[in-house]
Length: 253
Ligand SMILES: NC(=O)c1ccc[n+]([C@@H]2O[C@H](COP(=O)([O-])OP(=O)(O)OC[C@H]3O[C@@H](n4cnc5c(N)ncnc54)[C@H](OP(=O)(O)O)[C@@H]3O)[C@@H](O)[C@H]2O)c1
Image 1: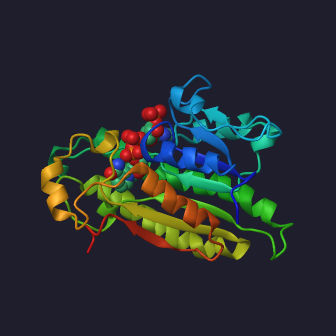
Image 2: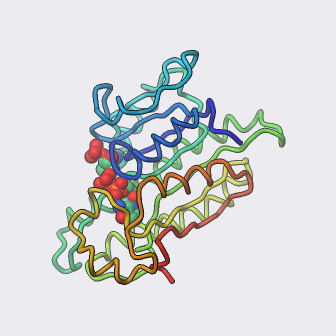
Image 3: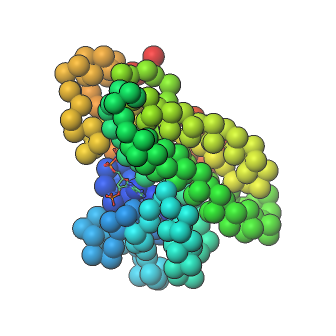
């Protein structure tokens, strides 16, 4: 399967891993919907996306989506131009993190993290999944499948001090993925997850490099482009469903 002419919605795609996925998918000919709170037609990340063949108009679409808000999703769904209404690939990448012991974490911090990282992805799977199911009614077995990719984390499974709420949100994404791979798989919608380890982005800027690189078997953090490569694999491989892909340089071993 090729990504050419596919429409891909990527939440959390103005920077870091989401932007790398958007750039990679656009390079392969996919129309990108860049959905983050700061998304706009003049955002440097939006302007940096590779352009598509001139016949694909409009090529990419930015929307200031807050994944944690059902109202924002509702506004988003009503604002999609006809050219972008049939979404083939949904990548739930929006995420925030903080490192704090649970007893020192405020209720607001807990709610905002769970609402962004987990509820946001559940809402995306619900709204976009419904559209995908409706459009799968006319699909015959020979056509390519639609696909959802949830960006979870190594911390869904590995214990690191001060990450309990984040870990819970990312473990929740694994339950969501496995359950939906059955529920949506019946409609030809594949649901998969990537568990990145430590990746070089703004989110990991303050993490002490020496401690972790000595523990990672490959002795370095990963790059956003390496995660994008895994996303391209999952989007294209027509037999990947409930594929839970570790991408952590061996840190999970
Ligand atoms: N970096 C790592 O080592 C690592 C490892 C494992 C998993 N992950 C996961 O990978 C994903 C991307 O991480 P990253 O390192 O690329 O982070 P990042 O560079 O901090 O980027 C976070 C992205 O999420 C967006 N975002 C934040 N709140 C949002 C909301 N309410 N609705 C929609 N979008 C929202 C941000 O948009 P604005 O710029 O508009 O705020 C930004 O585009 C996250 O889910 C993270 O948990 C990261």
